[in-house]
Image (tube, rainbow over all chains, first blue to last red):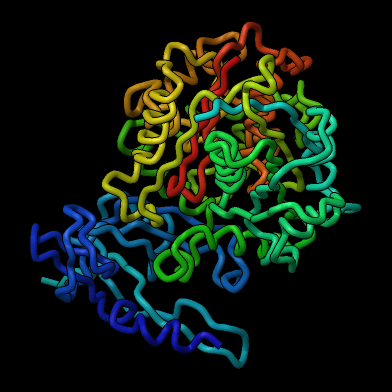
Length: 134
Length: 379
């Protein structure tokens, strides 16, 4: 059982809560209590908007154990509008619909399940930004 | 500080060794290295290995290997730095000799990867990435490198086929190494027909897993004046996750460890005769050449296309097949690189021999550039 391992990350998984550096203002995700830019302590929480653009993407055909049922699936590095890059799956999308620079937004989806009776782990994935119909 | 010599080398072929357990492989390579060195006693065994727990159900592996070598009483410890474990273990051995604390050290790198199903092996390797922010999302090592390669192609305007020279060179050279896993040259057509593993990475852009072990015996250079010496050794890290890097297309840890190792050795890029780099994926070979300072950013691919990386080029790489054709038994790879560079400098590389190798550089990468260990060997 890994309940606590996932429970303690719920703010990151469901809300993209990271940190901001008091010293230089850089936004950090995931939170690590130290600024990647200036190495100053960084404890102030910061909630990201969940929007950004595709920095890079791929399709995974040979999945690790626990993910075989999803394969093939698209993965991306997403550059959030506030600065940091996150790695996550793309969802609600077909290969060919995505290129570097595509605008995307965070959604909550099932990340994996531990067998028929195990935990279901939810978290962030990204999909192409839905456009309001004018 | 004592200068350190490589007195003995040993290796098993990289294969699917169905008849051998992880410790059998290590013992074979260790005995070969001890025989080559002409000694039977060492002060310590430093063992590089990544997945003996996940794939072989065996922690405490260094002690088991020493036990099965009949070396009760010796000091042992296993070192783990993902795919960089092998060179990390060599560096610990070097430090023990250089500091004068030990007279002789055995370093073994070993990995036994083919007992388990592919998905299990893939999962075990993925643990080198960040468990909470990469692995939980279904990242694989191929996937991470595919993300890097896609961005690299976008930034510098290359297509996948431009990376072919890295695979062609590796397989051509591996054909001349009896210890290589793959001993057949491949054609450009074969490369282009490789199936997608994680776009844009195809089969021939990715190194194969395998079972193997390599070993070196290190002593003070005073006791082995004619042996190949370790002139420089440095290790450096970057963020564990690729996405946290200042620039995901730059291996900061390669830049730093190369600069330090070259300063120790008193050599410059022009002095390096061969470079055994960590071509786990084609794009990683390009990034290694660039971040280590051999070419400008983005120029790794045209450098390979120019033929400079071939055996008769200005900077031969993958001279015994590299990770791509010799195979990539992850925790053993860094030691294979040192063993192969030593073969080249001794002039015992057989059909794979490059003429006149005086200075060799090796670079072993853990994760997707998170730990990078660089060594420079000389005479």
